[in-house]
Length: 300
Image (cartoon, rainbow, N blue to C red; front, side, top):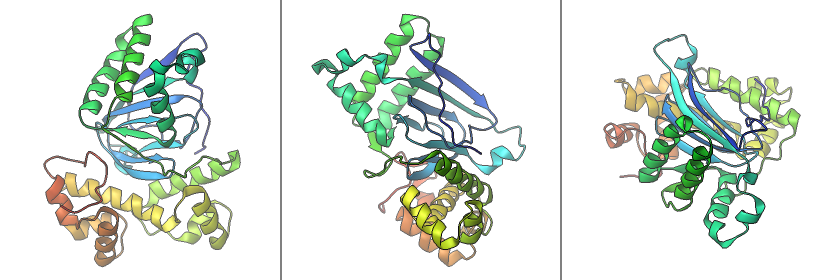
């Protein structure tokens, strides 16, 4: 799996919009020069935005800025030949020059400029904003000619006035990766997502990067803004959250299915990451589904 810089807009178009239907979402960790708006209509998995990792579910709507690495990795079940599982979403790509430097510099465009600046960390929209923006994004592929441009501008105006959002990547995150770094990190991401339900050693991950464990630990922390152990725990806990809400399994089964070797370690790490015990998490979200703001951080 190779991290790539993708160009998605044809030279004779102002922007691009696609209604996606596939067995799973694109599994390549990548970045590109365009701004991107993406809403998940069907499918679950793990979302990576810069150094941010958490589960995603239908309704997930995220705006990413240029050159911000991202990946919506479908859950393992989507790669295991179950034809009943499908993914669906709408994605929009556009360049900053869609609006033009002259217009962006004016007072009337202040909120749009602020929105574009915030997108460099990735923005997740929630609540009423998410619902209305998702509706408009699903209508956009049917529009033609300048109606499409007007609809996109109105969508950006809606997002720029919203308070229902949160920033995803850390404030200090920057994508300073070289081509060989992105490919190396992408291999590690792919390996972890394929094998996180099994026992994964630091040595195995280091071997993928052709490094010693000590060198790899230092390298991973530099480029991911977290330790490899923390990264692996986030993947496993995110998957456990999904199982708690979607499956009638006891906590011990879920711990094992998520890659934990002992129940005590699972309970400790689950609470550290979510501030909930597994059963409290299930009670809190069994009816409402995935938390609107991702995995919760406070009890009650």
